[in-house]
Image (tube, rainbow, N blue to C red; front, side, top):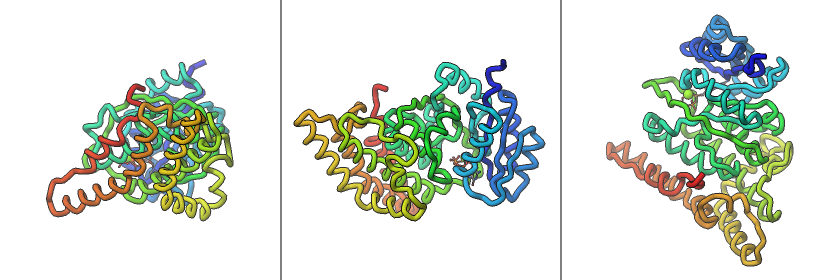
Length: 348
Ligand SMILES: Nc1nc2c(ncn2[C@@H]2O[C@H](COP(=O)(O)OP(=O)(O)OP(=O)(O)O)[C@@H](O)[C@H]2O)c(=O)[nH]1
Ligand SMILES: [Mg+2]
């Protein structure tokens, strides 16, 4: 049997008529089936995708990338596939990297494989790179392993990995939620280096402030719950134990979820200080709490100090913003991010 027959390509698309056909054709060079979710597109995305050989699911109203991915995962399962390769619709990924993903999958069939653009960091716009490095630091802490690029849409997902976690977040947060929950339940997330394609003037739906903020508050709220669990359960590293556990306890409804995120945002600094004191106090009595943090190559105190410095980082980026508006070429943010939030698993 053809080893790729159990894997299909999936594309969550929104108004991508200029690029979708090329992406579909590219994926079909390596995988027979490509399923595109047309997420309430108001342009010719569906027609272009179909003409290029994709199967298209029309979702009617636009619900965002996370919802479209969930529909695509379910569709792939119904059609009998065991894994999917997700790729963005805007042509920022090279489908000819697919064989490399398939190669990793062959030797690690249970792992999620995510593309990493970090080897090509010079091509990534500076502000995006800073948010990628920040996300990587905190998502890696929550996923109990270093994941070089946590914001890349080019990934291979075994469907069993998706089905073993419950997805409750939407839009761009879903892909982060997958890494957190999969990693924090003990699953490997492997990385495949890929090229970063940022053609000048390329279209984007990603909004720097609200979308980054939505991801950030989810990750912070996840960590506050995770560290709380590890604080009262000595020796525990993986705090996610399936649907309704860990951070999910606070996702009873969208309103409750949002209220909880606001609450954790307001309390994350004193909570972090408390966790830090708790870690060192418990260590005096050889009680192994907060063990996921003890796994990294940075001291627990230094890791938690990086959380406490977040307001200073926010201040630095606001100073940069104002300076740049006044044509003063200031860049405090990049130095700060590199200094505090690079790889906490330096020897990984
Ligand atoms: N179904 C669906 N997919 C979306 C939506 N918004 C974005 N996408 C998909 O997500 C991919 C990534 O979105 P982008 O807006 O390019 O975000 P990004 O690549 O993180 O950001 P840039 O680097 O600025 O391009 C797109 O190529 C689409 O495939 C949406 O509302 N619905
Ligand atoms: Mg893009």
